[in-house]
Image 1 (cartoon, rainbow, N blue to C red):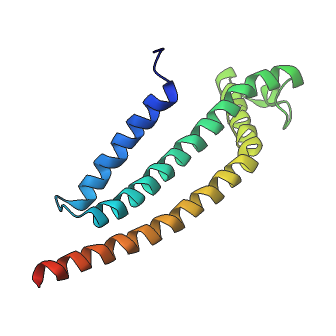
Image 2 (cartoon, rainbow, N blue to C red):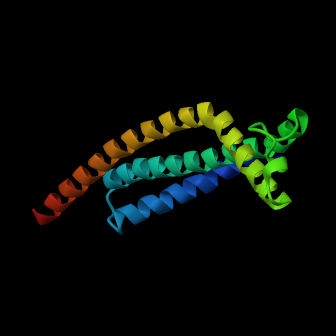
Image 3 (spheres, helix red, strand yellow):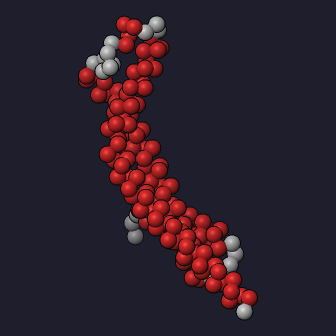
Length: 145
């Protein structure tokens, strides 16, 4: 055999996290149907969290590209701030804010797409939660009978 596949290792780790969250949702109840709904709910929770992390990474990566772009285009785009500022630190701060804003603007189309995907998972999570609650109610009724 060769080296373990990184994707398989990552999937096992994610799978373990999802199973742990699902077990917490089930709160010790040993019902397979309830557990399956908890898994679906946990997968949605995991994907929503990952999409939010990806959004931050996207802005950070584009923000890291901003100093290179500024070096190519010259001083601050909004005007020559260094002439009017009291200190070099103020100029640096203003330029950094502008670069962050530029990075955010470049990220907007990607963030919009990630937001649509996140909305899809929120809808899916809502359906999974309704199914989970319904399964809990059926389980409670069957235990009372």
